[in-house]
Image (cartoon, rainbow, N blue to C red; front, side):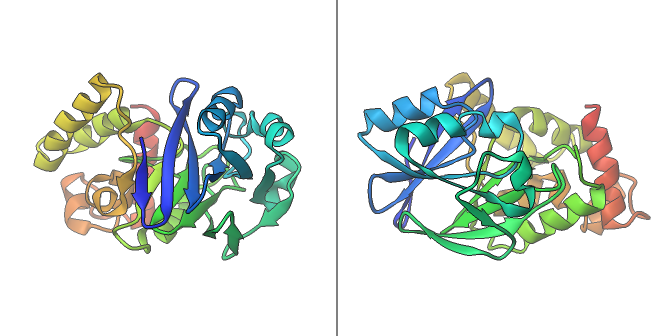
Length: 257
């Protein structure tokens, strides 16, 4: 699956049960891998295309995101980039980054956003109109709060919401159908969700990724990006709660869905 975005090409390498390793390149056959939790599939993908791997970008330290890093580095000589504040939990970094950094990687301009919540050291990467969000944001969902507080995650999601609506969102997991079920449980009569369900089922039946999604769609349908909508919150009985409190309540509900 190839998705051109001006000079940017993005492809998905599926690994494990539901992870995606996102591979991107700008104007050449020199790729960057985001969160390679497994090396074999990525290595085979690169060899089939006679492509090189110049860099590996890491969003956070969980093993399903870093497990293939050292093997790929040995095989391809790729440089490893990750959050310097969380370096003690990551493979040895060639370059540590933090909020606001802008990098030129393999001809791509990469911007860094700090998004703690899923873990305290989580970062995400913006390349052209693509946003590689790791486990911060999913289609119709968001990451579990393993280390951060609801307030922290809510603030991280605000950073994403402030980006252009045309931003394409590339999460690290195929969780869309399950997240859709949760969103629909909150709004069983939402016609947009009901229409989307048909498309998601078609893609699932044909083994087609549901991703990427767009920020515009997520702002419209993702419960975790709608907590400032007072009219919507009133329908859920949350009118008296603050946006941050609404988020915390919804995240707890999702934990037990």
